[in-house]
Amino acid sequence: MTRIWRAPKVGSERRCEGLWHRLRSRQRTVEEPFLALDTYESLAMLMPRGLCRPRRRIRMADFRVEKDFLGEVKVPKDAYWGVQTQRAIENFPISGIRFGRRFIYALGLIKMACAQTNMELGLLDGKIGKATVQACQEVMDGKLDAQFPLDIFQTGSGTSTNMNANEVIANRANEILGHPLGEKGPVHPNDHVNMGQSSNDVIPTAIHVAALLETDHSLLPALRELEDSLAKKAKEFDPIVKAGRTHLMDATPIRLGQEFSGYQSQIDHGIRRVSAARAALAELAIGGTAVGTGINAHPDLPGRVVEKISAATNTKFRVAENHFEAQAARDALVEASGAIRTVAISMIKIANDLRWLGSGPHTGLRELNLPAVQPGSSIMPGKVNPVIPEAVMQVGVTVIGNDVAIAVANTHSNLDLSTMMPVMSQRIQQNIELLANVARVFAHRCIDGITANVEVLRRYAESSPAIATKLNPIIGYEKAAEIAKEAGQTGKTVKQLVIEKGILSPEEAEKVLDPRHLTSPSKDLLGGGGG
Image 1: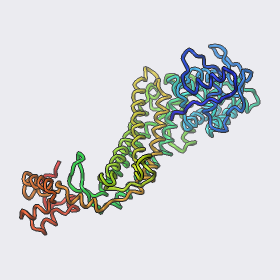
Image 2 (image 1 turned 90 degrees about the vertical axis):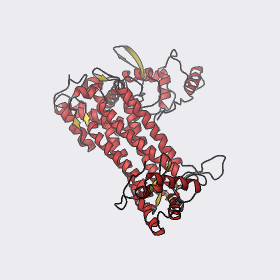
Image 3 (image 1 turned 30 degrees about the horizontal axis):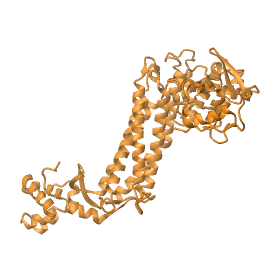
Image 4 (image 1 turned 45 degrees about the vertical axis):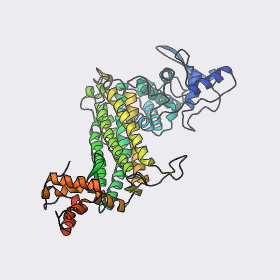
């Protein structure tokens, strides 16, 4: 979700006052320089409380100078990130949306697994490797989250964020070894932390790990809770007969429990779809390095790293079947996103049905009573709205929009690399988290508390002209249609009319036109089932 940039009012100087107003109104122009001071102070407001927030005004003397092949850059003195991250901070002050906790955890895990593997293979010095592993663990634990300030709208490969991780881990490892920040030694962000890796295999690996873990730990359990709530209601409501509706018009009777069993089945199918997409997310690109050839990586690195990731997460991952496919496109993400979108669409349908069925309470269908969880109007006293279903529907359309973004982003996977990975990562994570959260809310703040207006349901079922469908095998479709038409015009029930016209005796009419008898197949009378 988009965070609002909020800059602290740090003093009375004209430049700082200008910064405050510029960031507050978000009207920075392209020509207006984004100073390092501006960057650090504004980004600090995005950081979680207690995590590396500056306690005092940052002055120019509080910056260290780092350089890369493009030149020198001022970096906040106490920041664990380095020159490449600082450049990205200044290049991409776009949305304030940062990579989430699960993704940063995945980055730390991948870097740890690579460091451990490179030590095992004799490629990484033990002292450097152990310090690197310790720093990676701190990244995984969330202790360094504030050091990952980059916007998701950045280079399409996610190189800026990969280097953000490399620099933070390297600087923290150097600090552990007793060296000051910014020296790039003895632990170097590229030579050691990024050994045997490239942004082009690290970022897609992190995307898959984060998405699969969030799916397993949040989405699937939440959907099972929702399915369970619907299953309980399907059983509770099974004896209750109601009028069916097709095209929003009267149709043959159905049991309320049957309707809810349909909702349950939609979620069950959704769980199966999402579970099936796990196989694609379980493939990891790590080891492909720059373009899938594995240049500069030991041949044993991919398998060992994936084993370590699997062991650490208690989730079965595997090395990508084809590294060129795994890096040139994000088809697996599109597949998973499609499954998640389908669940969202199912939930929109269910939520919207409940709004209709609970409409009223005096001038609508009022077949169901939805839980009254809050007042519904600031002007109309006593009004209660279906706020939970409406929240579900809003999440659903957001998920659909994000899915479109993911699909379109993947169409820009040009030649040997997918080049819109950061936004794809953020959108899939947001979809998983939103859908998991709203599924639980839907289950426990709405479904669990629904009750049925049995008398209203019975009256609708008995008065529906569509009951005449059962007369098709007895008097034919044309005559049955005339009965249905007359019932609609006179307000009489179909049962009353067939008795009055001598078509059926009262006993026969009671048996043939019993609404509950019409809610399941029967061999007694066969014919057209309506349309």
